[in-house]
Length: 375
Image (cartoon, rainbow, N blue to C red):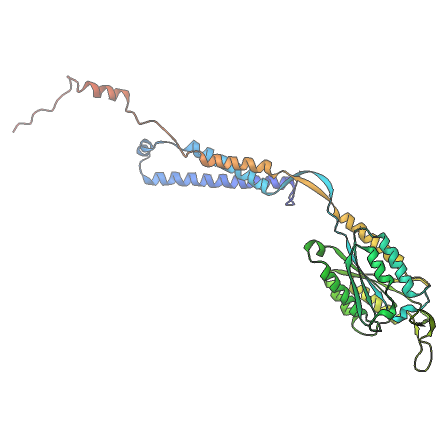
């Protein structure tokens, strides 16, 4: 037997007995108080003749029943439990938001066929592993585009497949704005209490070239909303030229500066340090892809670990509540003690038999009569 209140069996028994003894002690104090009041009232022999019954034993019985009832009630209030079985709580799942960089620097081909195409392929493989988790997408460059939380993974794949860097309305890279947009996406997608309790994860995939905003502060805001941000840095240290494409998809060369030099994109040490700070501010992890890779496998391992922890958290041991076994007798004992009379009435007082006989016979002839008083 265990107790939901956290007490051990020995402590619970002591508490119940203490409560019963306290009630008994109060009844004993009341008994002595009544007896002292009777003594102050008058002659005890006369009071005994005037009383209609003997109340001492009945009051003791009442006090004993009520004390036992209180002891049982206290024991029941400690919520005794017995046995136990393992149950699985209803699955809550995980809400995931893919925050993917669609700036033109993601067209660099240090990852084959390009950073953005490889990221899309890795995200598609990641979606194939999900089951019941909701997924949303925030595509960002200088501005953001959102796809709401859903379990329709095919629709998410279609959204990503048809979107490219040249479809973004504003160029650049605004990581802070993207994280704010992801936080707002979770807020709109969790209207019920059950949905708000779901674990929330942001997977930020970027080459780290942040040109505006305050991404560290945006990550702290996400952490305050219970969101974990994992960051995946894409790109090489050496730098890669950014290709240019015609509207029909034909490669036309590389982006160049005003002096005609090719513009390169690299995941520099400074950019990586900022991405690590973002992950740290939102209780997440930073994953640095190896040369020629995206690094999504590390993120997938972390997500599998989170699902395993969520599964263990849903496995609980349920104990049978047996407080009713003690509460019912407590109720009956208190009710019975309350219903008992304080005294059992005796029959009408009868004079002694000798006195009754003398009264019927009248005065005895030998009885002396008072002499007449002469004037």
